Image 1 (cartoon, rainbow, N blue to C red):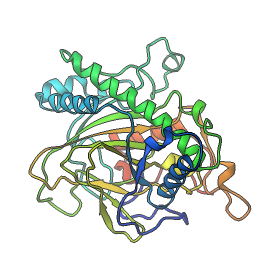
Image 2: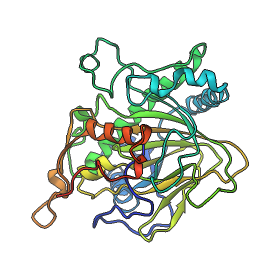
Image 3: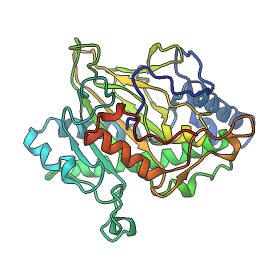
Image 4: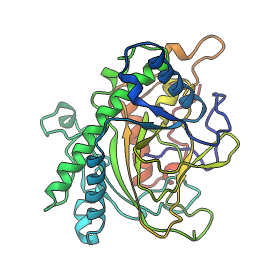
Length: 349
């Protein structure tokens, strides 16, 4: 989901961000080889991508194309339903933040812009009422909302969520190695994630009403990282260090992965969380599927030992991952100026 970055803001805070003109491609198939130069090359390429761009494509990721296509099909089928039926699973009906249907105008990624021109459906880790965190009333955990009379929607979309969890765990191992940590460093910190999968529908917007009218306005994501599937329509743009907006065109057989605020702060801004936006200038509907991978609710995010020293001290106060995410969600969906505000961001040292 989006964060507090203001439109056009440079969030690098001295990090190694460069004026890139395109996104690198990371081939995950090369990780199946024996440890050695080929494996090390992948880790090094990922490290450069996280430090310089904050965005990259992954290919040979192992998620079946049939599952991706069926998730798109089920999503478009849901969004085509009458508003009254979609509203039966409106996100404000859920005790969990955020699950269910988000109507047009339900979010505002950039407080200086109009509300986002999109509709969405959100789901997260499915937990029973007997789960200890659900019993304790932690708003990030609980059951999902599912539309009636659409059993294939629930089966397919949750299968996609689980596929993203597995891919996300694989990426976390790579991020750990790129940060000079043991490969399993994040494993016990991300095995009950607070993040979620978001099905998105952007109608055509060939002629914006103003310069502040977007499918989703300029923002950074606030979880650890995002895995994005985008259809052939295009429309995703990211901002480089010179303030230029760079197209991130769809590439068959790949996901787009981008660094979020949480892991940027964990790494003391060694990894960069890059502003991005979406506008659908085509004449057809755009569909995408974003999986926001967050840490466990009670994990304390504080500067990693490998990312600071006497000349580069920690830049942020430690914060609890789940509370940080809940603050962002509340700002996004329940007002308080939208996600463009910096009022609830972790305090800089």
